[in-house]
Image 1 (cartoon, each protein chain N blue to C red):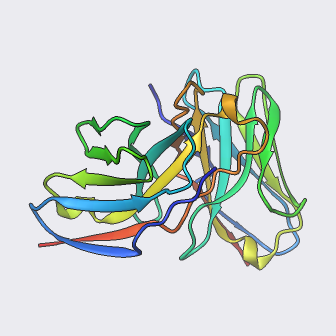
Image 2: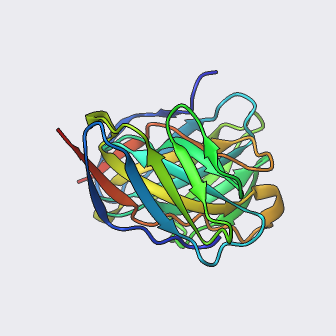
Image 3: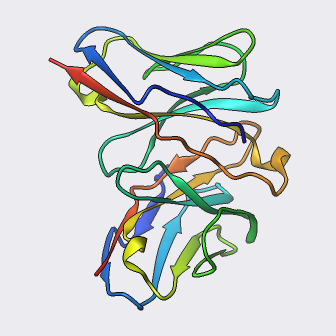
Length: 113
Length: 115
């Protein structure tokens, strides 16, 4: 099976702009989670989607939003970008079965200037 | 989801076994223990997971204590390519978690494999 794919891989934006990142889960996976990772930090949970519904949300401002489509693909959007939003954004998908193992994509590296 | 505690860094000689500890004293009965690793600026790579029995796959072995409050990831013959940050996570499955799952990741253990 193909792994989790994320597009674009790299992105440069300026403050105040908005950005949309895309994630295609492993075929058959219905749960998608998003994380933000900044230098020296662990993964910070953004939100989790299952069957097109947001199931869980981390402690991020409302500028961060997401959605999931009927084919389980997911997008996340960040509006009014700030310098501190520069990070590696990671997407993970899972089936989810009893153990709910998550598999990660390569990430999108966002740089805000 | 319960939190985990890992040493911030460890060293290991190439060819020797690397034993990475993790404490998860507040783990609940339906939470699995997962291990991932992340090589610089790449997405985390799944290694292994377990509930209460020891597990082994082609990458590593996972030893979980009988009370499930701690675990050890064993890389039997570490190579330079095993240099990475290793994360220990405990998590209940989404379908059992309701809407309170926060998917907490700590800072992991930075493992340096030395020649």
